[in-house]
Amino acid sequence: MQPTLAYLETLARGAGAILRDGYDKEHQVDYKGVIDLVTEIDRQSEEFLLRRVRADFPNHHALAEESGGIQGDREHIWYIDPLDGTVNYAHHIPVFCVSIAYASAGAMRLGVVYDPLRDEMFSAERGKGAYLNQRRMQASQVSELQKSLLVTGFPYDAWNTEQDNFDNFVRFSKLTQGVRRLGSAALDLCYVGAGRFDGFWELALRSWDVAAGGLICEEAGAYVTNVHGDADYISPPQSIVAAAPGIHARMVNELAKPGSLDPLPNMN
Image 1 (cartoon, rainbow, N blue to C red):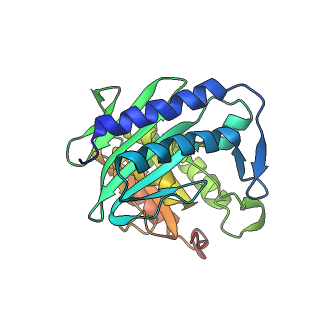
Image 2 (image 1 turned 120 degrees about the vertical axis):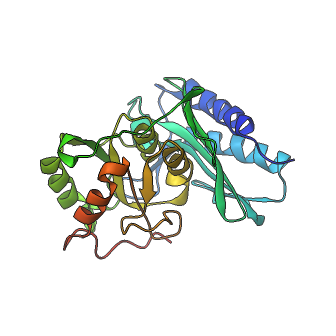
């Protein structure tokens, strides 16, 4: 048996129910870093997802944010973020999601991102387009940076790293209609795919942050690369630029200006 998009959607809805049931309650919050949080709901959601994947695909490899995942055949890899937007969730801000992707033979094949509060299921299968609740998605056709609305995020060690992304934030804020920060990279990518934003960039991420959303964005017609314009945005050190085809190159060029990128953090 091979995974299907319907299977991933079922997993995401199950994990989403855990997030929804726990939302707006007091949480047990632990710290992986100064501002890098994890809650008991992250762990419950991840345990549910890994248990299902282990039962149905016992030989597959899985990478998951909290536990590290499951060791297995790397020809079949799952990328699991059980709660993307944990800081939002812990503060009762309704911007968070479940993100699940599946890759085989070195290529991303399936991806879903589920927002349980809005009941929005973003999904894509390689070569078959991207969908929001079964309706085809299309990335923005904007061709001028000045007419675009962008979104970004900042690293967890922004208070203590040279590569904090603040200079880029200021630069793009002056070149566009504005830059937003939602706090969930997976949703940022899906919103670019849905045409809600025209572009997204971030300098320091993990594979489970971008695997599903990146595929969804690509299948919706956006260009998705790392910040250097290379196609591989999964291998560390991870960075990403996802944008309407008409402004992607301009965003990459802006990020290549002196002081924008070097040194990139090592996220191994």
